[in-house]
Image (cartoon, rainbow, N blue to C red; front, side, top):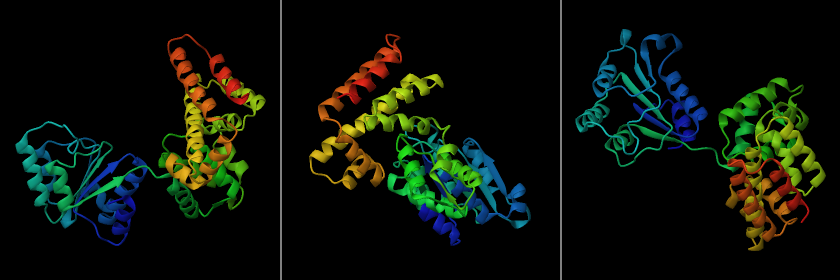
Length: 338
């Protein structure tokens, strides 16, 4: 089950006895964790009804905690964060595992267990299958590119704000440089934008100013200048980044990601794929795919491939102290002057 289905169930009052919240999106995981607890316990009941552990208890302790009769006939909610019980390759006493499986199958009417984990679970384990049978496993995979815009719109509605189209395009283009977008990060940035925006509609200038300190955002203009083959601007922005203390290797890595996507967009377009299909293949929002297709037309596939080789070589030399930032500067000059 994904987190949206889980939240829908919880809001309808369909609370399971046993949850395993697992995945790489801690912000959504914590949100769901809170929703379950809110549905089970009133604020004044939490001192007595909620037990929070930051690591797995021993089997005997787990049984004891679950069997503890709650104060004044309420509910007994046990939250175990960062569990390792479902991890592949974990060794332990088989009797303990059997004891925990038996516990899952016979939970007292008043007890509820919530496990959370960032690691992948081994679906072959008896414990995992027991959770699936007696409760529910909720998946918290990172949002797909096409899901980011709706999430931002929904968050802004919650904050009673909107974002202008050019501001939204700026945000989505900038975060497309990130290998993985954290919703915790996005949530924080949207709350800041809503707080500091002067009107109900957040402008591009406002969001750009608020997010300027984010490393990937501050590098965004440099990457865009290279992608547009604006050499003078690109070199000026590179100097600004280096003067501000930006790490050359990180700049190189972000440039490598962009050049790789331009090279892939070039090849996919040559095969006749539309910009929407290119975006899908590259895992970016549709308008970013369209922009990559347009930008890729400024370069030849061999030039982009050669640049990737040059970046790999510069990366190697930088890491062993055989090159400095001038290697990155030369790569930008070469690709923009094609």
